[in-house]
Length: 308
Ligand code: GLU
Image 1 (cartoon, protein in one colour):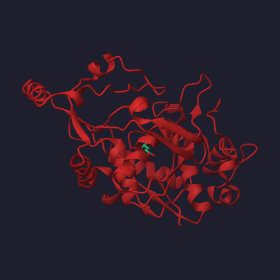
Image 2 (cartoon, protein in one colour; image 1 turned 90 degrees about the vertical axis):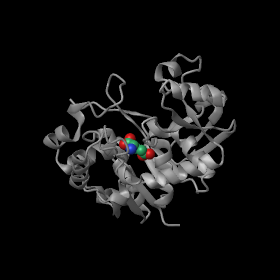
Image 3 (cartoon, protein in one colour; image 1 turned 180 degrees about the horizontal axis):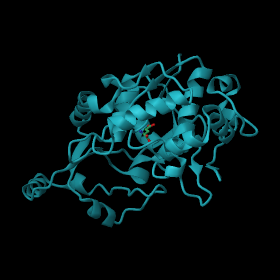
Image 4 (cartoon, protein in one colour; image 1 turned 135 degrees about the horizontal axis):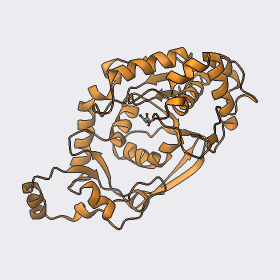
């Protein structure tokens, strides 16, 4: 089967070194298998994202020598233009009786005695699942607008990540019913990403390890919606020397600063070194890495970067 991968950046800022590592590995995964790469712009939340950042990230990817076969700034590949598909999937879940409104405010959710996951998220107790019709009406009268959650089964989803190995999660205990549509009507990432990956025929998902904990939810949603889940490959995160994850707000390591400091070949070499594909950082093009790429070389753990 042809490998169909994707890179799905959120245009909420300039890409940083960690985003570039994930993009390069997604590109190498596809190119080394002779497959196709889709570039999808995850601008679901139009408040937090901008077309200007989307244009900029496309220019930055090109500068780095990464190309794609489909997508980019075409409406069909921009989440802000794909609401109808998410609506359809939402209705499928609704018809199955799996969706319910949740009126909890953020502070109510945090105050609940549910445990926190490793990633800091709260496991939702299912409180609003048990509301009676009367209680719902009373909350509506108070002017509360609900978010929409999907009811999770108490079963364990086990997946074989192509880089991190076996990863399992019991959806009810480790995650809890999760939001698929926000109270302002915007569809949630978890639903949108599953619908998009399925409709775009994506069978390889390569992305940062911060999203590993989303993979069981997404695998399960694929199954519930009648799709074939993709194979996941979660890439190492890049950490600052103090152990902090690099983020878009680390301006010193965003693409603007990196392009002033490095040539495209130097930056590619640095990324390839972090990815275990080179013994030392040296100038290289992405194209020259295709034949030596193997997931066996890519570190399973996070990588500390020191760029002084
Ligand atoms: N849009 C997400 C991000 O930029 C990535 C989502 C995904 O790869 O599933 O972090």
